[in-house]
Image (tube, rainbow, N blue to C red; front, side, top):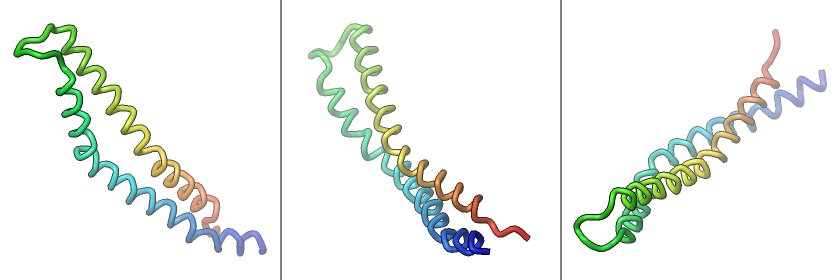
Length: 98
């Protein structure tokens, strides 16, 4: 009886973590363009001078930008996904059994 009472009391925490994680994830996805655009500007300003650049330098610059962007996305989505996971786990454990 006491375990059910404790489990029922942590359900709001589970919902808060789950919904909060979903909201944070949506905010992260909406802010991706605003965060990657300055990265693109910086990367394009550090290319070699001139109209034509060698293919190897262009590929290296694109690869560097992609690695930076991937690292940024991984950092952005880690916390919301952990919050959603913990919220779902709490909700799953605290479900009321009939």
